[in-house]
Image 1 (cartoon, rainbow, N blue to C red):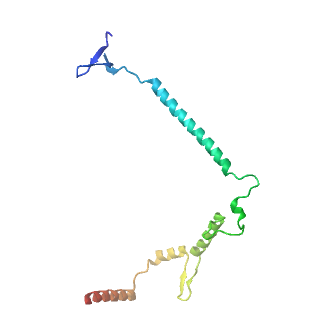
Image 2 (cartoon, rainbow, N blue to C red; image 1 turned 180 degrees about the vertical axis):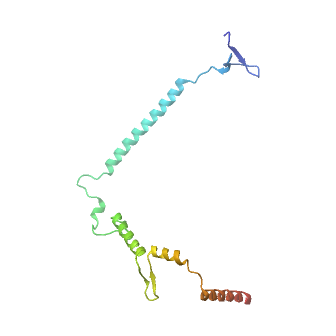
Image 3 (cartoon, rainbow, N blue to C red; image 1 turned 60 degrees about the vertical axis):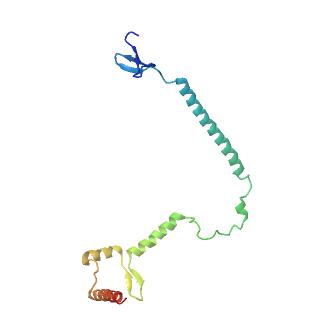
Length: 162
């Protein structure tokens, strides 16, 4: 201990775990390796025991749930033609979705009547975009402006009468 001297705490007591040398003070006490190893071993053992317990439990439950060979499920004994109440799940979703998209595209891409009695038609989206780009969006005409001003005047006079 020629280059190393024991460190004295500011309170005056000597700490046997701290040494002061030419490069400064350092702690000489190490980690208790055996305690850390025991802790890690206990965690690994508990993990393995839990995994084994789950495996055995699920194996037994699967054996109880699995139907015996030749045994029909309980629901199969009911009327096989009886359907569950609406709404039912789709049995074949991709073709249903493709058919739905085809119908939607037909509506968006072709001319057709919306209300023949009122003379309302639909036009393809591309054509509608061309018309809007060429002519702009429709604005309120003189007839619309008169109707709007009359409605505003009625609202104002109705509020004043109350």
